[in-house]
Amino acid sequence: MSSNLTAIELLNLGNEGRQKPVLNQYWPYLLGTFFGVGTGVMLNFGTKRPLFSGIQKHIAGVVVWTSLLTYVTNKREEYLAEKDAVLRHYIQLHPDDFPTPERKKIADVLEPWVPIR
Image (cartoon, rainbow, N blue to C red):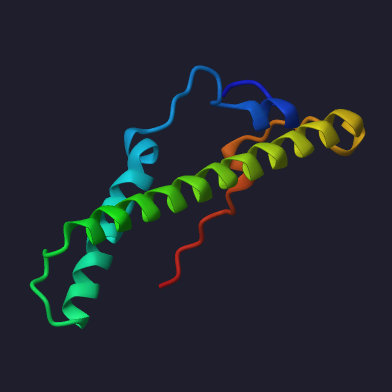
């Protein structure tokens, strides 16, 4: 980044042509499966049955946990998108509050080095 970036450019930086990482796409399904099967196992353990008996409990747990985690993920993404939109709108309405920062050299930022012996 050789040039000075405005606040809007910084907010939009890196979003063009970007797709979600693979783990972020599938985490509700992975965790839903883990917690759903775990819920069935814990229910069977609590009632002193074989851990993987009653497969309908495991399937129902996977469905419930996956649905819940998918809903939470969608709500989180909506919240973050709305937050970004509000920030973008505020920056557009108040450009004088966000001046373009002046360029600094590393030598101006670092303090002089004094060896302590």
